[in-house]
Image 1 (cartoon, rainbow, N blue to C red):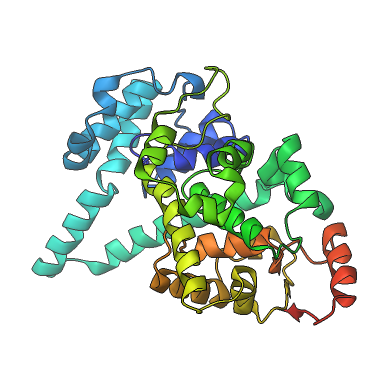
Image 2: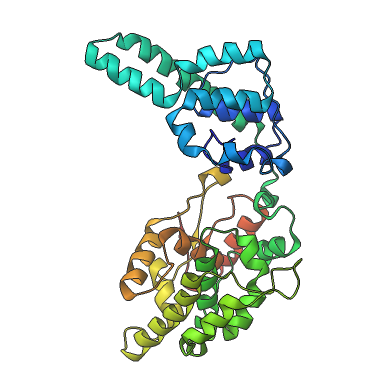
Length: 355
């Protein structure tokens, strides 16, 4: 696990319900280590993954300096037999990324055999391709009408949001300010977390009334930073205590006030909707893998808002905001929700766009 570079890959493997052997072999193959199929890696349960060998876990520098020795230590950790360990170590010795790269550079300087290294690289690419294809083969093929279950995991609040709010037009200034602030708070976190904390955010920021938020002081932000949940079992009744994100909400409210006072904008809602020419975009993708995480419109919105002084408004955040406010309808084409949106948009005064 720790040779693989983090827990993110593991989380994907667990999501796909792969066996422990498949998980271990996939991790090692994606690190360019060719492992014989007979090698059995007995992965401990995920729940105890953080409990064993803290000294080994913290030895990241040693792992980088001595990858082969670290690999052998991992064999001991995972419970390989001596025979399997010896066989794997022979194969790993010429295929550890750092050692392989150094050997290739040395051979190149000495006029070594480049064909040998091309052969090794081809084998690596073949192994990686095999893993990638196996993962794609194991991907679920969900009902297109329930495509968002991949994200909601049947969470009632999240599912209700996706079916009743997401992709629906929002035009009122405070409502748009709320969504822009929540999407900024979500940066680096899951939307489920922020959605469950939405009421806490509304309470903390006076229902996202732009004028009231703009009048908040540093002391008000400090109170939010020190606020603790009423119960240890429920952290949803307080906001995420990230000073930069909390300050950005107040900062953005002040920028909106300033833009209104100097005549730059008449309506914050009209201003934001101008980035899509006041016409919702109906997407045409059919598979969730085709859905973008940013577009030209979101990049332009991000660039313009940042120039005005807004914070936490990157292109990906802006695109998520556009989705949540109905500027973009990103349900898969042909699904129940897409068809309902198409009917709604055909009746819409001002029309819509198809991308």
